[in-house]
Structure formats: C-alpha cells, structure tokens
View 1: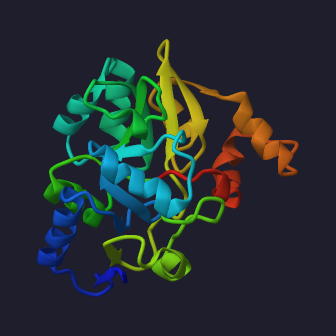
View 2: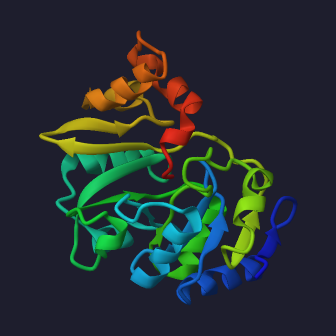
Length: 249
C-alpha cells in the first residue's frame, strides 16, 4: 500500500483534511504536522487503531503516548483531578507545546498510558493538527513520526521513505514551526515536575509564580551525553540536541 499524500504547503483543501479525519474515525493512521514535530496519529480511544502506531514505529507498547485534543470538553472526558495549577498552565500555554500528565478517566485505554493510571494530554496550536482532531471528533494519540530510535521528523522529506505505506494519509505542510518536542510536566503538591524538557522552559513556568522541579533523570540523561555542567536555562537547547531520546510530541 502507498500512502495517500495531501500537499498543504501552498494551499489548503479542507475537504481533503476531512477525508483524513474520516480515516482516523475508521481506525486508520494519519501522519500529520504539529507545531513541534510531525506525528503518527490514531483515534486515542480505539485500542486496535493505537496498536497500529506501535507497529508502524517499531515501538514498545509499554511506552505511553500523548493524547492530542482540540477543546476543553475533550480534556474533561480524559482527565480527572484538574487542579488550579494545571488550569493556570492551560490558560497560559494551551494551545501550544506543553504536555500535562493527569489522572485518567475509565474511558482512556491502557494501551496509550503504558498501563499507568495517568494520561499525557496536550492541545496543539498547529491549525492543521487542531482541525484534524476537530473533524475526527475524538482525541488523537500520536508519537513523533519516525521509526523508534531515529530523529523526530520536522519535515516530510526526512521521514517519508521510512513511513510511506505504513499510514493511510500523509499531510505535508512543509517544515514545522518549532522542531523541538513539547515539554512534558506533572503537577505534584502544586509544584511542576519537568519529566521531559522541550519548548516551554522552567523559566517560562516560573514567570507564572509556579514552583518548578527538574527531575534528576533528565539532568543525568543529558550529562551522559557529555554535558556535565547543565544550567536550567540551557535545558531547552540541550533537548534540541538530544531529540532522538524524546520520541513523543
């Protein structure tokens, strides 16, 4: 099978995007852009569809995926215990490159959480990603569009050879805006714990009057790459240099 290619580099035909959304509804995979990197998406509530993501990427199925949403109603379907700190982060950084870990509701399948009782959620700001979710009328589970272990795709030319035929549609909008994955955080006792560095920095969060803790394994991971003296304001740049270690959007 050869993937159906949608070229949105110069003009956008939303009827084509609706066809890709229909594929999501039918349990198929769509390769689509976000503001961070390209992703491989499936209906987050369809276990059989999500299994296809792991097969396409060659990725272990105990590795959690991010659920991408287009509105707060979707968040409330997927998450419980949405606290005041989370609400402040949502108000300031959504839509955008911040992924927040929440306690999950019963409708969230274990396959996208790695069997955990939490779910990673973000609302992308990329127009095409946002409309794809909206037209699909379901949250879209999506890791970065690449074979596991390889760099994340920031333009279709980087990844089409390895993924063509593994997804129903490929949506090409050219090079993504950011090129660095989203920051992944969890709020514990009103403190933001950074689980994966990304576009949103600790300083960005602290400007809101929120305490930030950087998990030790993040610093150790970077230090093993030969960066023994890591200041907090360099984490974003180091993430960019170590993108292949962080494979979700």
